[in-house]
Length: 77
Image (cartoon, rainbow, N blue to C red):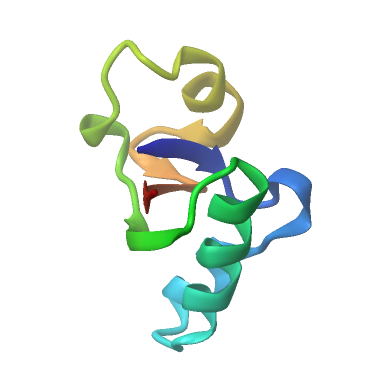
């Protein structure tokens, strides 16, 4: 699972999810491929409470109050 900021490397996955469009699937798959994985199994927006100590820099840079501009992507091999 990767926790990434919305505009990390220009993927824009969060914008697709926020509007309810399926365009996030292609972006999530592309991100997984850049990380040497086959494809995205799941991807979704993340709230601040969903993020534990594993991604502190993403949280501090991308969250204001409980509103985060962050997505989680689970990649498969």
